[in-house]
Image (cartoon, rainbow, N blue to C red):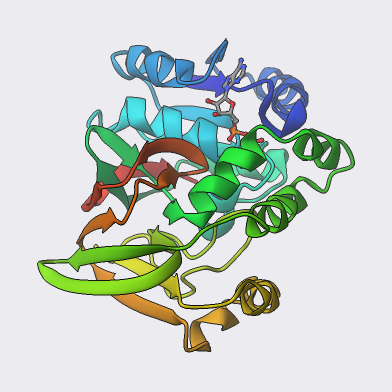
Length: 295
Ligand SMILES: Nc1ncnc2c1ncn2[C@@H]1O[C@H](COP(=O)(O)OP(=O)(O)OP(=O)(O)O)[C@@H](O)[C@H]1O
């Protein structure tokens, strides 16, 4: 039995459209399935927990990274694999795992049943699957989630661009902060920090390769710190980040580690998988091979 969790509002309604097509295919192929629709943020965590107590082949998320975040948080510890049919704006996890954007191919791969495990991050009781962003991009995620242009860009099938628009919007007003960072017990101080990205996969924000060497099953985070840079320089660096070329800039420091502790001059927003989680201070720990993926 395959269980589907569908976020109808992901990708500005793409979730529902994709589900209708997937359901047709499931009926044609006579696959046993059950479906539940999310009614509110975090609802997918509860549904996934309910499903994980049943005997099932996979729980499949239809939505974007926020939906996957919730479904994964309900499944971790259950040994039930997570399937992904991308239907969000950014779909960064699907990109990083080479999961097809096409629903038909993504479903075929799930039904073939090949499994692999991936690492996840942990902040308190919450699991983070893709990238945790602190500071500037926490604020960007906040602005992006409530922006009107995200819906409009999704409508014209350019949803991945909305993150870029939000970056420009926040850039005008953001105040960099001094940061103390501890990575596996080793202390660092950075001044005028714009952002810290703690990455399990290379990309976030719809394809920005913030930590181009991040690998989802190496037991390590790749950490990118952008500090001591003017707004103008940051703006010039931004397009380079889509190819991961920003890492060569002198204001970018890259570190690898398993346990990251961040404190800052004043509390700044922390996002994971595009969802606002908390504010600094924050502790992020790697959990090696904690999530089973079917794809
Ligand atoms: N019925 C609902 N009404 C409102 N929000 C919901 C509902 N169900 C889920 N959500 C929330 O919708 C948000 C967005 O979902 P998701 O991230 O999957 O799509 P997206 O933002 O379009 O894609 P991406 O994260 O890939 O850019 C998540 O925070 C999720 O918790």
